[in-house]
Length: 148
Image 1 (cartoon, rainbow, N blue to C red):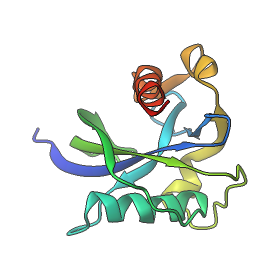
Image 2 (cartoon, rainbow, N blue to C red):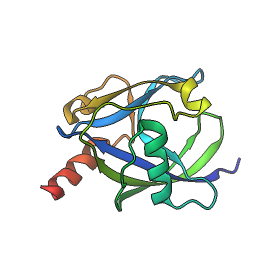
Image 3 (tube, one colour):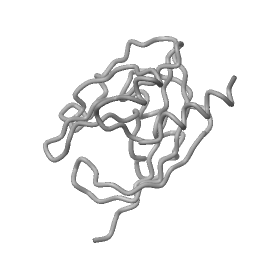
């Protein structure tokens, strides 16, 4: 069957200790997994605008997402059961606060997002549950090395 295009903004939200915010998803049709904040672009919405909107909705932070820093193209089946070809654009965002607000979550997010936590790179590398994107540790290591 044909896959639908899914432009998406993914957020690499780092705290002052370079820990990455990840959300745990628990859906009936698959094993629990962790993913970065972010999501699909609304029709006509730029990746940058989607990054800012998703950040506010999922964390309560109203921050500038800055420029796109990475891109991935992947295929998967969404939590709604839709096969997609995702064009994911990544944004690196730093925050001083680790207190997030989830009042902006959509009904779907409230149903499937089973928690959140700030991960160190070592924790991400050895976590027992699936992490998406699977190359997040390499991606972050490269970004942090370039930034130092």
